[in-house]
Length: 134
Image 1 (cartoon, rainbow, N blue to C red):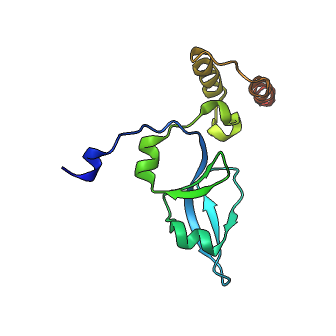
Image 2 (tube, rainbow, N blue to C red):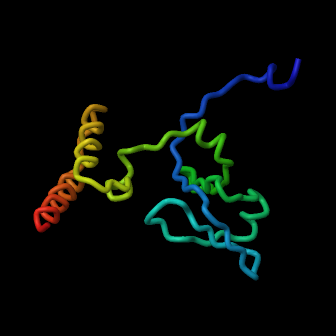
């Protein structure tokens, strides 16, 4: 019997902040700048200790836990274990290009029993005004 068969099994139910890594730009001082695939996230610096401990790679995720601990997760296990919280993402980051898409997103949000934030309705109104100009 393997050791994993003898150990109790756990299911993850943590909430984390995470971004998918697009590029890692190594700097002379041993630190690096991480560029993410997430639109609107400014590239940020990680120190040499983080790089040595976690050995991040492009395509994986830079992860920050609720207690502030920073980690790295390869894409496959991260995507298998976590799902995106849609109520946390501002609508402009959904890359919605048409008003119909925004209506659809609001409909799905309401179907899930969530209250639609005023900012989303305001954004929709602004987009509708802009399209009336054309």
